[in-house]
Amino acid sequence: MAHLPGWAHALVVIGSVTTVIVGGHYLSRPLFRYVVQSGMREVFTATALMLVIGIAALMSVVNLSPALGAFLAGVVLANSEFRHELVANIEPFKGLLLGLFFITVGAGINFEVLAAQWGTVITLALAVILVKAAILLLLALLFGLRGRDGWLFTLGLAQAGEFGFVLLTYSMQNSVIPADIAQLLGLVVALSMFLTPLLFIAYDRLILPRYREARNEQREADVIEEQAPVIVAGVGRFGQIVCRLLRANKIPIVALDLALDQIENLRRINIKSYFGDASHTGLLETAGIAHARMLVVAIDDRDRAVSLVHHVKQHYPGVWVLARAFDRGHGYQLRQAGADDVVSETYHSAVELGGHALTAFGVHPLRSRQMTWAFINNEKSHEDELFDAWKEIEEGIRFSPRYGELFMKLEDTLSDVMQQDWEPPRREEVPLWSPPKTDE
Image (cartoon, rainbow, N blue to C red; front, side, top):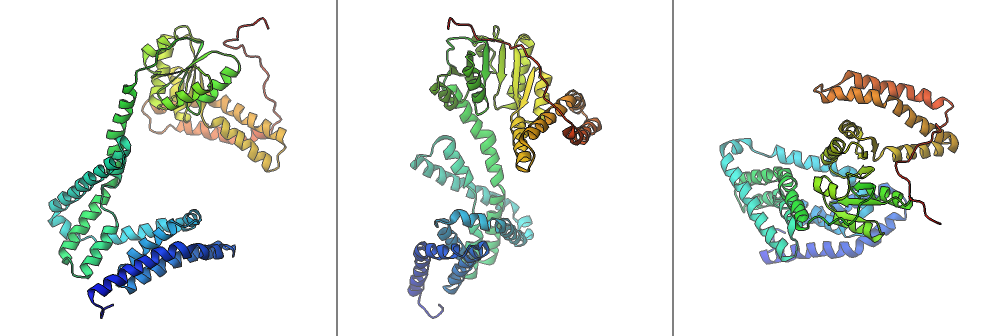
């Protein structure tokens, strides 16, 4: 390329890039189809990597950065019909190569320049983020991305990209900018990328909650037209199943939630549901908590769920409270708040799947069912002891040896319990509410 004039060099570069994009679009498909017929994943992965290396080498031949070639190869592969398989095969290399890239970036930082011109580096990095964020915000408005989506688009791309290192290196090699300026700008790019997590934290902590609150404030709580013996607070994927089960047994319910889409889903299947925050005292009273027999707490906010249980048991102790827990610790918090029944959202499904795993491994289905019941019964027998030991942790002890001891005791006895002949206990439970009798 050295003997070509500038205009010819430009034409060769444009032709090379066009050839890679167009040729890759039409030629990569038959190439990968041929490779797939071999039935060897190693050949598939090797072909993808060699394609990247080949395009990078082509860019080097025309005096461009190999990183630009790798970028173009990524564009070609991303548009291939085999992109999902390619992602799965190249995933193991992703973390390794990214790690090497950022190690190289860190090794190339001149800390003497950073120490001497830290004020300039910080100022330029913030200026890059602000200017780029302003441009992205304008683009978001032009293309209809508004509200929280527009801010996520703006803050997610406001930092300088890693391709900036490639451009700086290429510019320095071609004497476009001096080496000292390139080092300074490299620090600016690195610092702006370092600030990326802070931008996402700012979005999660400062911007997203405002839009959630604004969305809730835009609509007032629905006027509850009727009361029922059962109030369900939270009708997501967990609460919906509870509502359907109760309705199937003709038990009247009042469902409350702050998610409009969930409320509308319940209304489509003719379940009375209302928009509103169940943790607000006034809304609970309107829903008839004073005369209700049961409250089901299935809201997604852990702290709100605990405070709701505590409030209801303090002011309406006669209401039977059933609460959904996210994990063992949250379950203990709900129980301490006064919940009469606590169920972990994944506990029974995990036990059920474990029973299927035993059956698939050759255990007789009836024996597998007995083992799952033995597992549940064994955990219930230690539940109170574990709860008492957990209270010590909550009172300020960072690690409770007693809790760990009891938990290991549970694990040690579990294997013995599994081998015993066991039948589920038969007991008659008095329902909290029975449907009214009809003439039929």
